Image 1 (cartoon, rainbow, N blue to C red):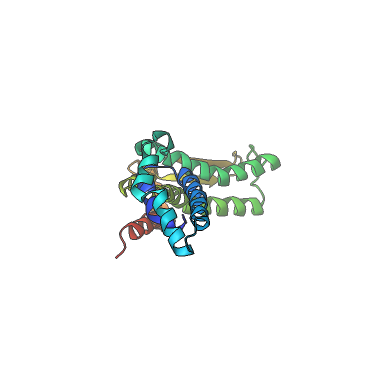
Image 2 (image 1 turned 120 degrees about the vertical axis):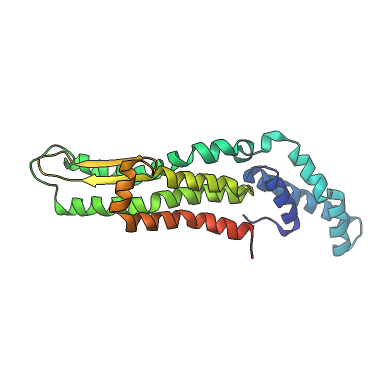
Length: 235
């Protein structure tokens, strides 16, 4: 998030204090306008450009004073700051499933439209089988990474402690959100999306059978967290 360089320290203070980014942006916009008015008043009072800027900034108030005026107003705090446990512990699986529904739901709509998911004696056409297999493979590869990136991004914008995106990422890895597709003659086409803890037998079987894909998924899921760590604790 980019802020005016004049107020970059103030912006960091507000974000770390739990103020929602949208309120920070609005507050800084108001301060910039007020600073411009004060600067113009000082110019009209006869001060040159440099002195007018210095005097206007002093009249506006120090960063600590400006931050205190905002931090005391609890209604401007974000939900991530008020209840990070709810956001990072309860919502990650739902976010991942919502992302998965975008993929699997599209296939279901196509399959329903053409009747490929109905009980039938023959397999669906090759193009739909290839499409379904490819979309499911891609969804399994990127569902968790996209969800992890979402919560890492929230933590980064709000300057939250690393423990929160770590919890969200570990939860996504443990729950093992996975989609599946099967087509068999004389059977109804099967498309599914769900989650199960990795210590369950069904999850371990899937991971064993598709270990290459799952290894790539787990690595990609951890990358946003690594980016967050490097950003928060640069070498």
